[in-house]
Image (cartoon, rainbow, N blue to C red; front, side):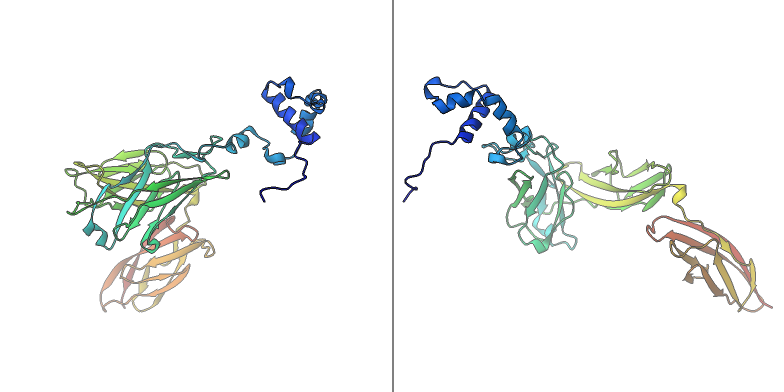
Length: 365
């Protein structure tokens, strides 16, 4: 039985009025031959009824309260819209032997243009990306951002990676292709960074690539603030507002000159702080002491709820705490001078620290 019998299928008064309102708004012509007496009466009510229906809450008769929602709910087309023609896998070539390396093979997926996807109302901030990877225990998605995904493979991918871009109106699928697997080894470059993990705002920071070879590889540094430099050794100066600390993620990409699609990357973070963020480092202790007798070392204006205190006594030993004791012992009839170093670090960010040194003379009777 395909339907119910004996049911009046003619549109009711409100449905007819609503249809007039929609035609009125769309400036559609109304065929007088198809207008019933009720329709003619309601035609004169189009404007008042339009005002009534415009005040109905969102979702009434499946209509939205915004033109953006109406466009996003329209039939036809996919949403979100993929604006890029494709996604590059870098490096594009990897040998089968490379997958057996303990560190695996990192493949970075980046779109050919950005933004990679937009919602039908033109926004991008509400789009989420999700990728389903075969053998998930062997791959790790490190970062997405504006679809910038780095996946670490520990074995040859067995299939394409199925992904979706999702917003509140719907989802669109796309595919990530694994790199080409060659029978011969592709000489992947070594990507490693040597640099401090923290720096004072306004002071230059040197970044070095580990084991560089400019005759074979190129070096691209991205500093996390929109700037970049090239070369195996570069210097970068960050600046932050007084009294603030900022963390930046640095990416080094090392590419083969003869085939730039073959490359590796490394990342490291750096904390930039100002003078106001530095802890006070000061030593309160005697400048000489008798061998075999304890010497007390105190940190000036200490606060162990906010800072840690590391003492290095110049003889290979160390201690922690705002107040410590140290006993030096030397050969009778000799004297020795030791340099004591105190490092005070922030507990909330140990990379922000300050240090001070002081000498002490140890003598015998």
